[in-house]
Image (cartoon, rainbow, N blue to C red; front, side, top):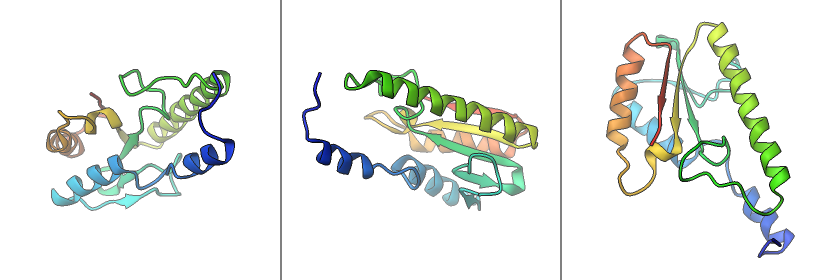
Length: 148
């Protein structure tokens, strides 16, 4: 199926998609800050530059977009335009995620992954997600995944 917009328009649309400071990231950061946590953002010292780094707790929070990381939820659908390109891109993103998680674990970091679908839609519960994160940060579990 051909794209419904010109290549120039598509390029402009895609360039507007951010990799940092997305709405889901802002929601998580605001909720953690309101609960008294202080953190660093996108630390270049750590593999993959995690979204939120809580050094005091030796914990990082990764906020993943469902499309870009190929999450198996209702918000991920492989585009019909250039499916081979998109499948390869998503697989590469997943491989990078796995490599970065392994490197973080090897360095002794605990990892929480919050998926976009947990913060999106009519029934989203940002406070519930933040409460689960708070418990995890103050606890000692090595990993947490929060999804729809």
